[in-house]
Amino acid sequence: DAGVTQSPTHLIKTRGQQVTLRCSPKSGHDTVSWYQQALGQGPQFIFQYYEEEERQRGNFPDRFSGHQFPNYSSELNVNALLLGDSALYLCASSWDRGLKNTGELFFGEGSRLTVL
Amino acid sequence: AQKITQTQPGMFVQEKEAVTLDCTYDTSDPSYGLFWYKQPSSGEMIFLIYQGSYDQQNATEGRYSLNFQKARKSANLVISASHLGDSAMYFCAMRDLANAGGTSYGKLTFGQGTILTVHP
Image (tube, rainbow over all chains, first blue to last red; front, side, top):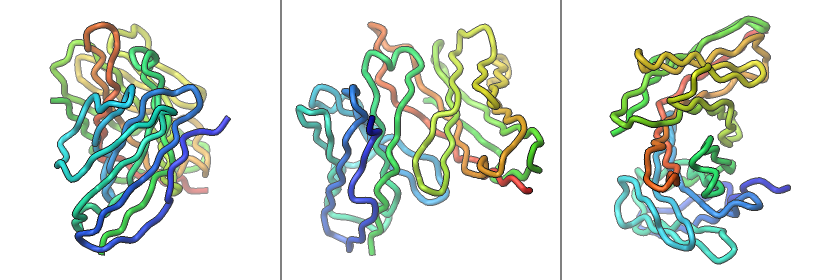
C-alpha cells in the first residue's frame, strides 16, 4: 500500500518564476493538506482540499493556489516566487471522517524548493 | 488562536536511557487533540502518538508515552529506552476538534521542534 507520494523531491527556481508541486494521497484518503516548512522551523498550514474544493486556508498570500483532482491527488502552485518561498513543502493526506477521531495525517517526504 | 511552544531546541540522551521532550500549548478551544511527530533527515513526518483533550488516561504507544497535564497545558513526550534511530527532529502539534457536525478540518498547528540526539 503506497503512502503519500510527492514530486518532484527537489527543485531549483529563480525569483519571479512559477512552480507546481504534486501529491498523491494514501490509498483510501480523500483529503489533502499542504504545509510549508522553512529551514529549522515547524510546518505552517497552507490549505486543505476536500471534494475538489479548498476547504480551509492558512495565512498565505494568493500567490499560493492549489487544486484537487477527482482521483484525490492534488497540486500546489506558487506564482511570482520570492526568495522566502524556499522551503520544504509537505503534503498530508487523511480520510475526512477519520479527522474527527485521532485526526492522524499521513505525510509525504516533501518537495524541497530552492529559490535563487 | 492556537499556539504550541517547544522550549528545548536540542536534547541529548544516552542510548537505552529515557528522555522527555517538553511541549506547552495555548488554546481557547474546549476540545482539541495533541500530537507528536518525528521528522528524520529524509523529511517525512512520522506520527508517534495522540492525546485527546477529554481522554482520561495518558496515551501510550510502545516506547512513547505522553505526559498530559491539562491544567498546566503541557503535553510532554517521554521516550523510554532510546535507540540510535530515535535521533531526529520532534514536533508537538495541536488540532481543534470543536467543528460542528463532528467533522474537523484537520489543520495542525506545530511547534518549533526539538532536535534529539542519541549517543551510543
